[in-house]
Length: 284
Image 1 (cartoon, rainbow, N blue to C red):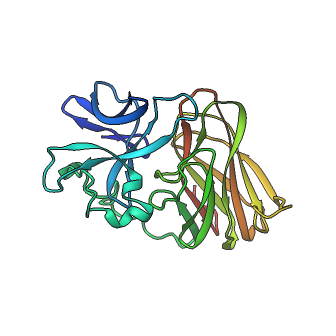
Image 2 (image 1 turned 120 degrees about the vertical axis):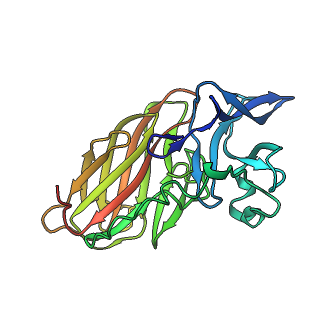
């Protein structure tokens, strides 16, 4: 059952399936649980063609770890024994074990491929120089206070946030003061950009403001200074458009800075779905 821009619920009869963490002899164990009202989304793990859901340790309040889990199936030919399994078992160095020793539960028509894969493709827009989509590629970091590089269609991006979930998430927990989380391009976008269109996904965190920056050189280099800065208006599952000056930005680097607040002990986040870089302004 689709929920929002990028989330899903797994419905079984009149109830919903979720990953349930519970304290077990000084550690946290995880089980599948049917609930009347869903409290969190499943997201699509494209590399394994299955769904995943976040869950946080409950046996400790000191830096509890949050991980992503898929529904593991002990026997790939049956569905009689299912349990949560950490996605680290089927990604990264363990990707070789996918469908060999590790079997994600794929439930007939409920998982038929990447969400939206059967929809007709839009005609190619010749004015689009580059599109960053966070729907499929994943990085190595799943902590909101960590970061890693991810290469998408030849462009390297650095995300301060969880890139092991699609779409990528920027967020925090236990931070009462506004804090910045950045999505930074470390590769120049070739050509002259006249317009940038940003599409946001779900958000359950307080977004104080979002700043769009343009650099003539690598933003991560010491002393790098933006040549253009503009605050953009945020709305969950909405879009924001930034128009370049008349001359445009040629072979430049781009950055989004999300200023967020979350004083609770639960991970909360905002997602960015796509950023489209255009050589001409889109028609109204």
